[in-house]
Image (cartoon, rainbow, N blue to C red; front, side, top):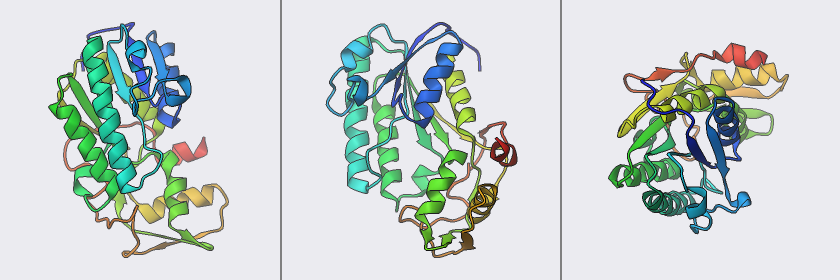
Length: 253
């Protein structure tokens, strides 16, 4: 990917979250002006408040937001409203590149409300006037705790043994910066970790590293955010970029 611009003003929507905060820090360390944007900073994509001022003289916007709830209606309303408001403000500010962080396989998990909402977000961006890149990433290593907790009852975590290809948040951040420094794809690109592993085994290894005594059981009937998974759900279907950090090395950190 050839670099086309340096020293850019890059606004990170959702700049206070896991990915967003890392992204702002790394952008600034690499010579860009990384600007965090969130409701706590007076910039609200749902209402549009603060957007016009925040986007002045901005070349790139990276949207890494998440809704306040993964519940289907809430997620859909959030992504549809915030994305439309954001694209409208970007058009006024002559933003050159809109990047969103989406999910590998979202279009293959239509029985999960959150995934339907992510697909809707992607479609709004694709139909908009701003040059764009959709970065679809697999689940973060940092999200394994949440996945395990959601499958836990008592001292047992029941998880579907579906294949995953999880990735370190730091590798996602590095790739987003690379995309921001290049020309818009006007399409999507998949990003995944360096190895495939089943969800129950990921959780088992994670809990062992934390000296957590919960038992992890592979259960084909277990749901993932209310939906069913198979071995194609969470992994890239074809060509994809790969993060460098292996799960065992991330655990050691």
